[in-house]
Image 1 (cartoon, helix red, strand yellow):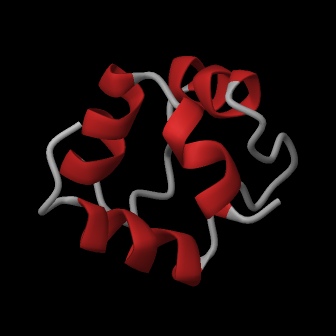
Image 2: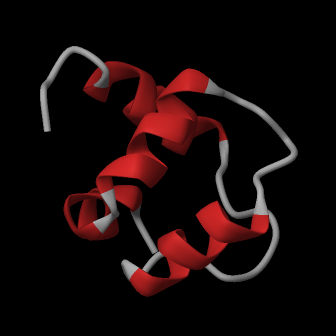
Image 3: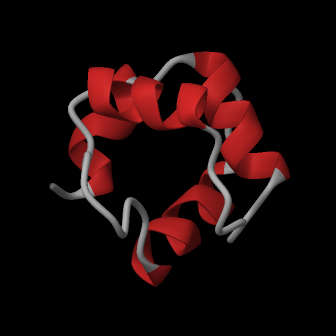
Amino acid sequence: MQIERWWPYLDGSAKAWLRENLRDEGIPGKIQDRIAEAGGPVMEPLLEERDWVFIETQQQFAE
């Protein structure tokens, strides 16, 4: 599932964690749950390089 499809539905605190911990391989269970609830991936790898690039570019926009 492309991040562009589920990112708008992701909880704001989960977005903040992902932005503050760019490319962190140890995504906490709570954040993984929020990603799944938003319609994102549930199997490893949750986020690939293109997803991290998307998150990084979204840092400039306020939610």
